[in-house]
Amino acid sequence: MLQLAAGSAVLGLVLSAGVVTATGPWDSGQRTAERARAAAQAPTGGAHHGSGAPGGPDRPEAPAPAPSAPGVLTALGKAAARPQNPALATVLEPLLASPDLGPLRTGAVVDVATGEQLYGNGAAAPMVPASTVKIATAAAALSALGPDHRIPTTVVASPDFRRVTLVGGGDPTLDGPRLRALARDTARALRDRGVSTVQLAYDTSLYSGPERHPIGVNDNIAPVTALMTDEGRIGGAGAAGPRGEPANGPAARSADPAGDTARAFGDLLAEHAVTTGRPPVRAKAPGQGKRLARTRSAPLSSLVERTLTHSDNDIAEALARQTALATGKPASFDGAARAVRAELGKLGVPLAGARFADGSGLDRRDRLSAASLAALLVRAADPARPELRPVLTGLPVGGFSGTLRERYAAGSPGAGVIRAKTGTLTGVNTLAGTAVTANGRLLAFAFLAGETPSPYTAQPALDRLAAALTR
Image (cartoon, rainbow, N blue to C red; front, side, top):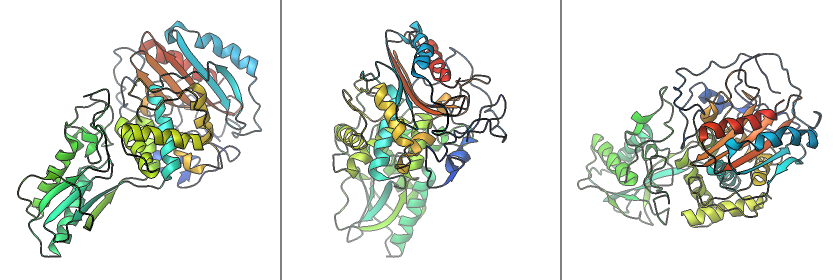
């Protein structure tokens, strides 16, 4: 059940067994890994996902987690009374008609326990989803690969051990400490064979097609390559958040993250008395090579949660390409788009008019309907699909975490009971997630608005729509 401390935001949304059957490291319906990270609040990610107040200062300290309190809501399941469709429309229609949402606005609300659509206004109309498309990207990756999949970065030696190749597996979260450990293990393996001088190469051939996102050079995303460190952020680990958590949000990016990573790897090998001589060259690893060392990312479940909580564009693009690789398609923008669509089709998600131009939502050619997003959230709560559960646990919590940290202030009916993915591009504002009704029923919702006059008025308007579901 959902536990609230009076007047306080809570850490998580608790899904009863009547709606969700949890598997893996769960504690009261929330992934334990997520709870451990939640004490360290990261800055918001993506473009313009922050507070709706123009010029408002960042909150200096994260709110303390609410203490445990007796349950005040019934378990989320079929026993709770279902909201009445006409009454829901009466509440939502005036809010959706707000001029703050511009002339293009659609919405859908679905009962998670039954799958019944309780409200719809243009629900099937394809809209620019902005970063809410990350819900689709995440669900497709989890469906194709499973929550325990880890992305490898490998070091391979040629048969004569004269060349060592750093092979990118598509992990944008590779960081300085893991790269250092990889160099140490590589140097140890070489020393065991009496080798102290090698030629260093790096292999990015796992990905194909353009590296640059169609939006071009942009602080919101690095070149999409199979080998990078710290998401290509200039400054690397120094760009991390104030409490040492992974960096999020816009930052200057390297123009050559793969080359930078290879050069850093060469310097680390030198610290272990392995000489690489000339600068590393880009080349494919030998087919009959010997693996010397390997590091792997966090599980896909954790990557999905980080992607959704902080609207991480770099990981989102990596998830899309991992889906392509898992389904036999090219790991390119086009191949990833086809793979995501095919995987969502297997989940039975309505996709009429849908288009996936990228995995992050930065591309304005993306199209997705409110009905599709709501259906994805219902699938993620399906007891028969526990592998999709990180889609729910990764959603930011209103007033508490990720891109909703500065929204749903204390006292808002949505604080702690709204979990939703935000989406923001210039003139586009979207919100899709889950809400708990006053009598404890779980609803999935999606509200999408286009040609909005300002994010500073559109975001609060979307928040009012979601909060209305909790009353």
